Structures are given as structure tokens and as C-alpha cells.
Image (cartoon, rainbow, N blue to C red; front, side):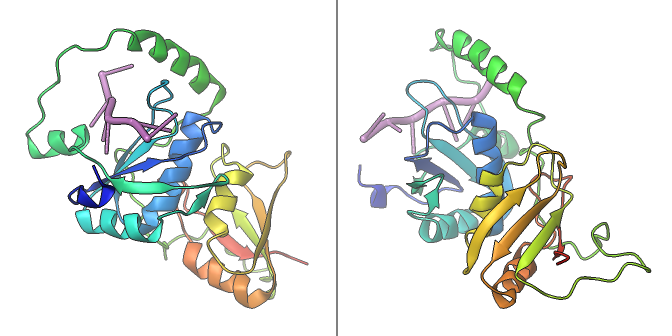
Length: 233
DNA sequence: AGCACA
């Protein structure tokens, strides 16, 4: 079937994903990257032989999915261009929501061992984001944690951003994926000894400011709206 | 290339 012939669906199907990325990191990064298009209900990724390198992102609305299909087509993600289509079928989580869900009958049994393998993999990862109930409300005006206190002066605008309140499992790849969308992006630096913070460098202060505005309050997990200030020089 | 959710 020509991908163009697949009717719009609130779920997108992504292939050509980098298979080396751990499943939980992949899901978190997809969540982070795609939540700019709207509320995400679920992210599904399996590492079984048949399903690795692919993922499904379930949006709350079809329009969000449509924008994502168009705008993120061929987006370089972990060094590989994403190939995005609409999913061919309705996701279980939306069927459950609209009452049409019927548990499909047993067809797989070799998947039990895939389950075990997944357990091990998850043991190395920290807590997964709860993508089912998560929402990214965009910049949160009420977020205060990163603002300087009364006695502490804010750094003047410059080309380096200081990011705080990141979930401890955040990797520099995840931040790279997020910040590289903005022109002038140079690099992400994280400090091994200080989880939860990062520095992101741009070519100049105009470009860093645009990224700051765009990603201020961005939630990598629902509990972690990121706080972005200019780095102290 | 490959369309699942347990």
C-alpha cells in the first residue's frame, strides 16, 4: 500500500528508527519530540525482531497527527531520518477510550520471552514516563524553580542556556533531539556529577533566546517542566 | 522492510 493511501489516523507509525536506542529512551525522546504537536496519549515501541526500528505515537487529535506526519517527515532522529505514516489501525488506547475495545485473542506465545528480555532492559533504565496520562501544556507560566531569587541576579542574555529540573534519566541525546530543531544549535553539555541540569550552546544570544522561548517549561515527563535561563558566564 | 498495544 502506498503510504499516501493510508487514511488519516490519530496514531502515527514511524519507521527507520535507530535500533540501537534503548526502548525506554526511544519512547521518552519520541514523546518529547512529538508533544509539540499536541497531547500524546501513548507511545508504543517494541524491540521484537519484527517490530524494532518502529514506533507508534498516539495523539489526542487527528490534526496533531497530520501536522506531525508532514512536519517531522525525514527529521534526523538519532542520526536516521524518520519515515512517518498514519497507522493502519486504531490504537488500543483510543479504542479503550471510545468503548470499542475488544481484547484480541491469543495469537502470539513466543512473545512471553520478549517480555522477559524487556524486563532486563528496563531494569537498567530509570522510571519510564507515564505517556498514557501525560500532557505537555507548553510553557508553564507558573513555573518558578529556575527563576533567580531576590538576591541572585539573572545572567544577561548570552549564547549558552542553563537547563534545570530535568528528569535524572535525561540523556544528552534526548536534549540534542529537542534543541537541534532551533537554528544556531551547537551542542549539549551535561555534567555527570550533577543530574537534572544541562548546558545548551547556540551560536549567538538571539538564537539561544528563540530556543529558550520555544522550550521554556517543556515537559520531558509530566513532572518535569524544564526551566531555562541564560548560563552565568 | 517491517503496523502493535499483552
